[in-house]
Image 1 (tube, helix red, strand yellow):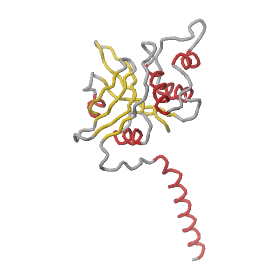
Image 2: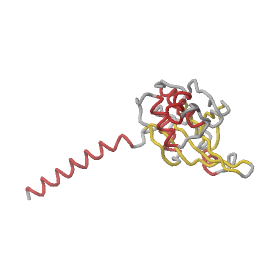
Image 3: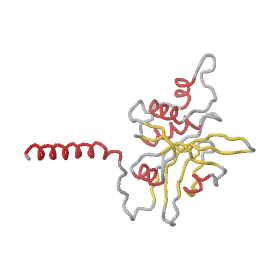
Length: 197
């Protein structure tokens, strides 16, 4: 009997420790009366036509207040070669995460993942972290990739809306999250995410 009680107590302690260790990854509580949240900063446009990925990394670290490097320096380190030190090339979500870590001098850990839910994104933004969204879009029959910085959300009208900064145009846009995910917004489909772990 005593051994069984001891095992039960040990099991309870182990479960408690596991819950505490995993609680940092759980979604935080957003009060029901909060219907919007925005993260404004001195965002910058992409320096070259295919540098949306590194511009978003720079903007994410600017928003976090830890940016130590511009797009040219990051591209030089990650993609530069002799004689083209600043090639006008795109980047994958995982390369965007590496660029963000590099641009904040490894003060934050970034991960790349698939598209996330509205709850996940709104939780990140409400708690002070923007999310980089990668999407594919079709133009004249060809498929392209692009990245934007998700930096706001709103549910006050009963519709889940996201606000993002587009480094290609330098503009803020607000769209229905459902349309952004479905391909009905500019024939684009949200497919990947980069965010602070």
